[in-house]
Image (cartoon, rainbow, N blue to C red; front, side, top):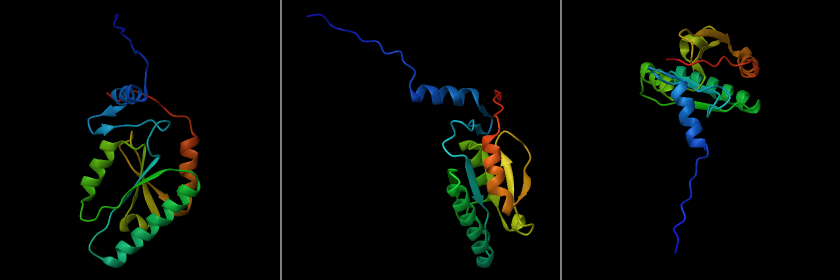
Length: 149
């Protein structure tokens, strides 16, 4: 009887994902390229103690999710209650979804949401009525792939 040894040297999904994370990360976590991210948008809602305000934030988030998902955009929603904004932002950076949209009473007062790309330091405001179109344009735009070390 002869033992047969089979070598498997293929590149599978787990190796590809590991390689992507190895190249695209910083001290805060993963920075998924748009083309392979598990979600395109990470929607973070910031609520407080005022139930009326919280309802408005949640309604806006649900409307945004519907608009984006109708356009074929996959959204991860962080709707945890009792968790600080800093913790939500740190978790969002760790997960590394390429685009974070933040709905808060502060942004709603200006009729906007905060738009923060994972590889950028600063956020900007985008009008609520423009979010879906701008997300679509952003997803279609060429991606700038660089190592973040």
